[in-house]
Image (cartoon, rainbow, N blue to C red; front, side):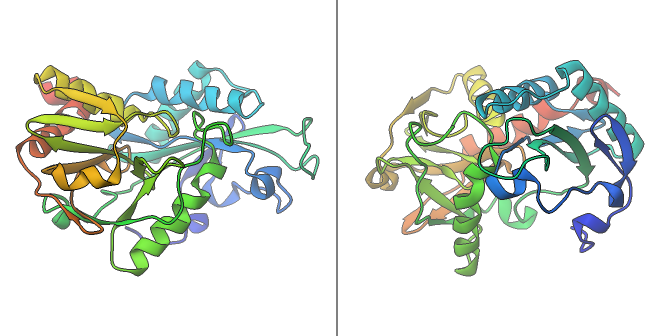
Length: 296
């Protein structure tokens, strides 16, 4: 990955309806989204010149804003069109896409109902979230200190910036101990997710994954569940307790950034990346490849 800071890169960013120079896409220090986390975002990937499930991501961005109490001032068609044009202007075929919407700087305080809702889209080249050489060997996860909150205390169905505060803390703590990421439990003590990806386990040929009742039901998560069921693999969505982890043979993460990444270790629990993990890594790679590119 490039060592150039993100505010010093070349190219363009779509900012409130216009394409502006990357280095000029700036906001004020008293922006409400910075102080009070009144921001929602998406993480998307383009493969061979097409953004995978772009409309689903765009619709979730708009819905996330609604959950946080604001209306994204662009239609899904407008956002999709801007994304595709920006991808073309950036000149990338495979890339990461980051749309974000946030309250501006017109008012400063907890209440800011009249603040402008800003929207921006940035696209850059971002390789695999985890070390490709380690990926099929299985990455190592720590067990996070912080837990996913009760949905009665946080808007868990929104991809809201504020919900990622404890994810950053947990990932930093895990990396400081030599792990790649951390597994988070929920407020009940049940297995929830990693800091930026959903988690799956394998036992006796079936896949088990936590119910997405207090964390984001990821688009990649749903895609992988569908891929598994197409292969005739049973997928069970249920409550999973930490003490059950010793009974699972395989484990893998899913997410736009993580794609499908096998796990070899979570704290004291060990797993061996096996046939189901390998199949889904390959199946997901095939699924995200635009059909026109595959046909060429």
